[in-house]
Image (tube, rainbow, N blue to C red; front, side, top):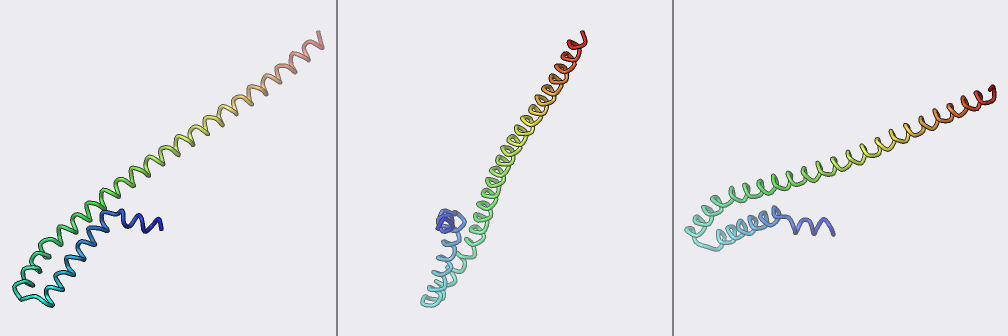
Length: 116
């Protein structure tokens, strides 16, 4: 159902529907109308159809750019999260190393006090 909602929200879909309706009207008039009507409608369709294609292409470019920006933002957020975890890991390693050195120093002090 979500895909259907996305389709009905799509600007490209509605421009394509409009193009189909106009083409259908042209066929119907061609079937039942006079020769002048058909010629006139075919000329109009010929004029407007490239415009519909340009509009659909422009919508596609806009949508692609928006998706790319959203993807870039998501990747940036993931990178910040990764960098934060890496920094936490580095800090944890430094703390563990400092605790190990402190334990070594306590052993040295204990040995030194025992000999004194």
